[in-house]
Amino acid sequence: MGVLESDPAEGVGSTEPREQVDVVMSVEADIPVSAQTESAEATGATVNGVLGEELELLNRALAAEATAKQSAGALHGVLAEKRIAVIAFEGTELEGLLGLLEFQRSIPVTLAHQEAALVPAPWQHCDLVLLNTPREWAVTQPIDPGYLVRMDKPTLVFGPKDVLMRLGGVIRTDARDFIPAPWTSEDVAWRAAILLSRSPGTTHPGPSGDATKPEVVIAEDDTTTRALLSTMLSRYGMHCHPTDNGAAALQLVRSLHPQAAILDVSMPCLDGFQVLASIKQDPSLASTKVVLLTSRQTEVDVLQAFGLGADDYMTKPFSPMELAARLKRLLVRNK
Image (cartoon, rainbow, N blue to C red; front, side, top):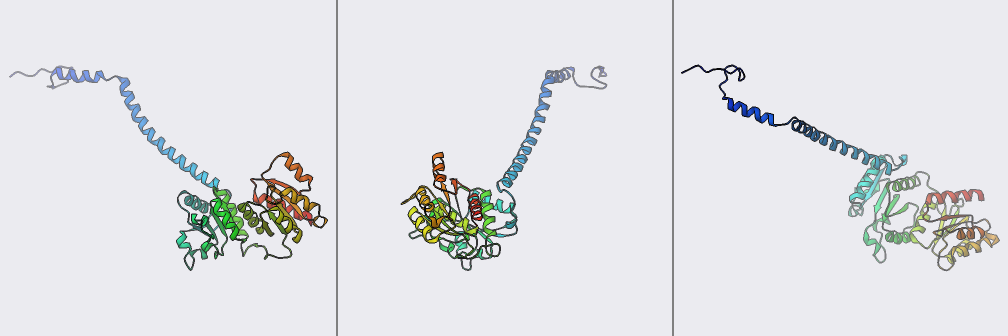
């Protein structure tokens, strides 16, 4: 047997046939440099894609948190550390309210309607109640507001407009406020803060009939708006006399000689302009301030109102807080 010869190109002691070496080198030579670069770039792109998705999720989470804080509006110190019952809310509405209360540093207590109706009531140890009205309250004849009647806590009542309209006729107390759908977290926050700050134990106004309490006649044929006005102005220390038509409003003004009257324009029996004219033509009612609150926004209507002697004119939709501020300004000037 002869000694194997070594080819310098194959390396010392190589026994691999030249043909196999040539094939391997040929295959490697067939892979272009550009393909190898593309493969590396693809791997890098995959890694960058994963990191990009994670950053996108993080940015979305931060944006959602910022949006939640912005929608909740400013912090209201009166809500901090307060126990707030959240009754009969579900899904996104419940999540939104819980997020709002967390931002306001409140302590939420979630309850179903069945739990809220128990005796003793679990909401009795809460400072404020957020109540979502059940649909059956819209059709019950006569309306049965259930445990809401015996609820002695400041309460924000949420629900469809038709339900709130019916409740406004049977629930008459300064410790209630009504929020028709749709509502915003900011709206809930400031209404809750106002309601809680006006509740017993803080700066709650005196009892009805107090000689220092301004008398205000409210003439509005929309039940929800009428209830909202009565509730808001009562919290500002005013004794409200609501009615749904112009004739009854004029009769109330003539018998009570109130400090102010708020009149809708489009009402049954007598419209707001007719009531306004009758008040301003009566010398005994000269001190009664009259504010027209209406959806009529034309220049002709505004000029007619002030021509008849209106002390202020506001158009709907309106801010209850702005109306209260304007009315208080008129009453201060009247002193």
